[in-house]
Length: 299
Image 1 (spheres, rainbow, N blue to C red):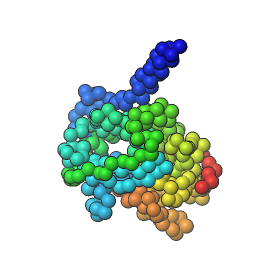
Image 2: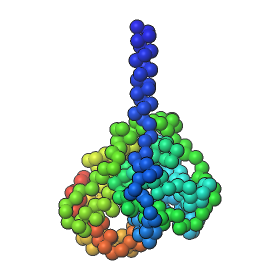
Image 3: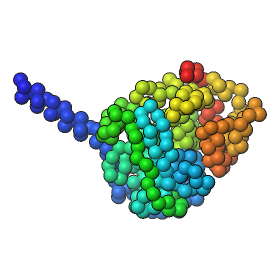
Image 4: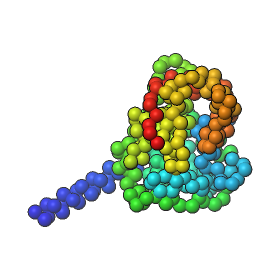
């Protein structure tokens, strides 16, 4: 019996090790990422994705100095976004467009390790290959920044990074988007931006004890990821009196229809959305305005 128990335990361990492995979704020869991307369009994707808000070097006035290192507190530890400048030693200068795609779509590093979901690949996974290729082209035009970000300090549960693989099995659906499509081009463009590129639900939702978004609170607000405040509900429950024009104006100027201004991390978001064309801000507003009303969860 002891031998059988040992064999069963060994089989279970081997199975767990296999299914928790980090597998990149794209191979280096994938034709979707061949050729030079459009860096001009990539700059817009960079802005829409709010990349600088997390990856800019703390205290650096130039938001394109992407040395990383900002501390992101969470119930699961403190995480620090890495250097994503094109520095070949400390940044991503040796990455290919496929490496970037594997990070964004699969949450997998070039070393075939899982990224912690503090990096919102759970939303980025819905991005198109064309947008990723263009984003890569733009990132490679930015200044090199030397120095690596300090290491993460995850809680005990996730100190073994392989355990993220089990988290993914439960809560991550590679390549799938939560976008609610209607067939109307402006609405559906907004769906892509809100749900994938701009990853709005990552902040404007509540999370379970496992750190996954609670589906019934999507966009309904909740405690911010760092536990320092409460992110507002952006469904019709809270924004019912806002027009699409009000939302689009806020995304450009930071001004709210009640003569206030957005603050905290949303001010950084507006810095980025202000760079987008009016058509994209209008699309985001169309989609946000169409979200069904969801009650705000208790803090």
